[in-house]
Image 1 (cartoon, rainbow, N blue to C red):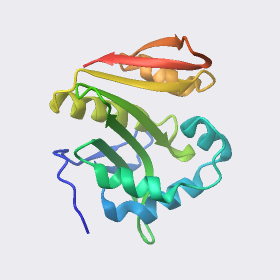
Image 2 (cartoon, helix red, strand yellow):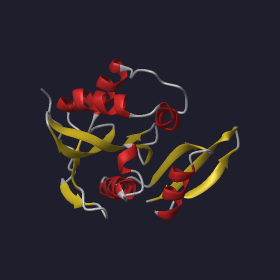
Image 3 (tube, rainbow, N blue to C red):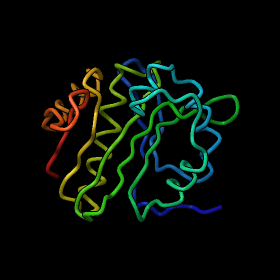
Image 4 (tube, rainbow, N blue to C red):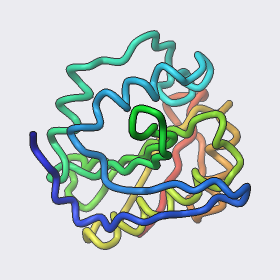
Length: 176
């Protein structure tokens, strides 16, 4: 099984409500846990993350994306202990585009962990990793109705503007 040398330094955090999590780079061996995390997402949460109704994950795409790291970007996960080892309760990712100085980000946070500062922790860690990698810009496309993500992006320094090509979207942009 392939292990990724992402250069990301794992760390432990305690959320403001006292729950302890471990944050680390995603690994190929995380596939089963990622699928479980997807199953635990509500239809609304899936819609906010994928910007369309998604009933089941695209396993081929997931495997291809995970295998492309760390060359094409970075994915980090927040885990908690579980009966089967651990559960993934949050993830953030950046993918380097055709311009090797820019990347696009995306995040997913389990509903039980929303509002506990996990999103801020993961996004900040992702930004720091992109800076260390020498990237100069990060952007994300967020549904206009995803108020929580838009607020988070603004709080950590992203500018948020309407997408001139799609009124249902906002573009979050950060100079690194």
